[in-house]
Amino acid sequence: MSNIINLKEKEVPMQKPSRILDAESVGKKQVKKPEPIKQKKTPVLKESKTHLEWTTPEFEYYKNSQSWFITIGVIAGILLIIAIFTKNFLFGLLIGISYFLITTYSLKKPDNVKLSISPKGVKINNTLYEFENLRSFWIFYDLPEIKELSLRSKKTIMPYVRVPIGDENPVEIRRILIKYLPEKKHKESAIDNLARNLKF
Image 1 (spheres, helix red, strand yellow):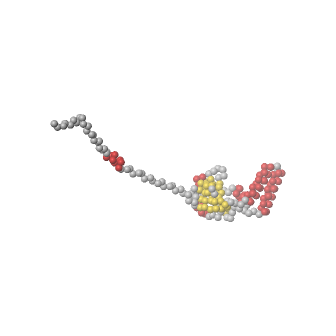
Image 2: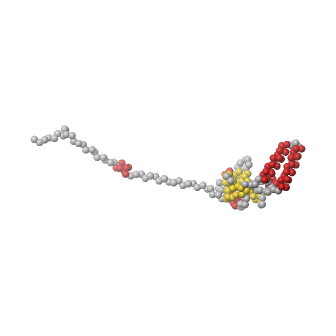
Image 3: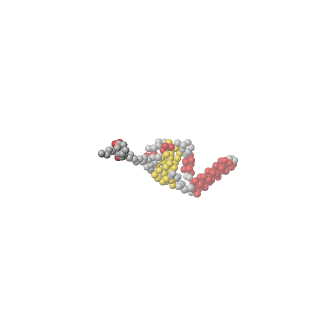
């Protein structure tokens, strides 16, 4: 008699289901997104070109003779005697201080200063006077003694800045400055006139 196989008693091994890959997942694994190209930032170029640059003594130097010092001393002495006789001691003190300052300043030799004009402003050594803080300019030029650039700032106290021109061409200085500032006539101060007349 033929053997009958009982399927209930015999364990039939189960086949593992084959892994079905999703087309979308395949696409995700196989296709890589391109990395974004980093654009280099273009540096902003600042306008820093210097239009004009020169070096000159900070003030006009006068080599005074011995007679000049004697004259100044005599004038100061007369004024001091008047102050003593009138018992105006404050006036006498001012005369003494003025004589000391005039003689000391007249003996001082000027240092050289470096000046430049750029689109930002006028620079004297390490100090920059920006055009946005200035009102106007004027050039005092009367050879052989007067060669100065005057800048009027927006400040209330000491609004004028005097810049020595030296041997630089005043026409060239004016041609550059007029692009940035209005040209308006400035008045010379009494102190400047006195210093020029006394030659100190």
